Image (cartoon, helix red, strand yellow):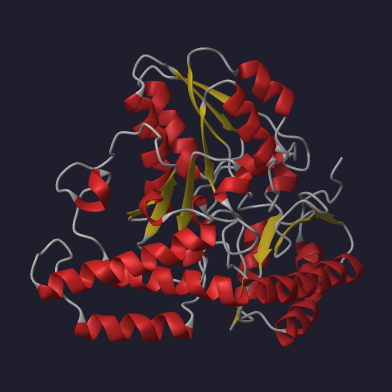
Amino acid sequence: MIYLDNNATTPLDPAVSEKMSLFLKEHFGNPSSLYPIGRDAKEIINQAREVIAKTLGATRTEIIFTGSGTEADNFAIRGVLDAFPEKKEFITSAIEHPAVIQTANYLEKKGIKVTYVPVDRYGTIDLDYLKDAITPQTALISIMLANNEVGTIQPIETVSKIAKERGILFHTDAVQGFGKMDVNVNKLGVDMLSISAHKIYGPKGIGALYIRKGTNICPLIYGGHQEREKRAGTENTIGIVGFGEAARAIQEKGNKDKKRIEGLAEQLKNGIEEKIPKVKFNGQKSKRIKGTLNFAFLGLEAEAVLLSLATKGIFVSTGSACSEDSEDVSHVLNAIGLKPEVARSCIRMSLGRFSTDEDIKVVLQELPEIVEKLREISTFDIDED
């Protein structure tokens, strides 16, 4: 198997699996219980919280565990708007993850005015448009750190300054950036930041929201007193253990991973552009997560390329895993100005910690032949203009 869909999810790191297995056998206590096995579980959670906080440059009390990155996004957005009911406006971008886009759609039905900041052909937001969209009624701005489909990195530090100058809270969805680039909440200047374990070789079903101390936000889930009364429900101890171990690995080998992955991705990008005609690369050339590659194979349907690669044991995607079943054109590719027929020809390849030189060699051997054969039977125009 050659797995090139790490933006959808990553394999569980063996070190994470080993740590989780150990705690699964020995620590079953409810963290809210006052007797020893409950206190032990609570301490385990706090140790993981400390590691994750350190990785982000935050303090332990600023990390709230959630059930996913999606929940963290919902918590940040809906929690702030609930905290400021007198304010009826929310600003986000046109290329956010469905977790933010669908939340924005929900808010519009509730009478909130949502402004979707457009992007250029590389996927970078229009800062002037964002500035002009801000009014006294704006409660929150939410702009993703790095796009999950084309990898473009947004000017988060600049947006943070704009938000701060206008007295507006700012949230960033850092799910795709965390573990692939330096993510420091103080350097970025954000008030809230979402992350997820399964994007950094940890388990699924566990995420976290960084909430800067003093930020006014209402809980999304009510019940018990867990998570400093910000997120009720018995903690997913085993998932938190895995998240903490995955974050520890970022501290230990994140820079080494990044350098190696970027080198492999560059080999793959150059090879595809050299070996396959009529290929269009989507996204920024430099300001992007370089392990993310998005190509339009003009004249083809992306699904045909994906399925053909799968028969060879090579797994890629056509975009966000959270919208993969949709027949609509990707809202991200639409926002950067691709014609529908071009957008439907796009494949995303995302490399990770376990990608190898051999993987790249095999892909560059198999993909050109697949594209050539599919184009022989295609009835689509291969001209992008």
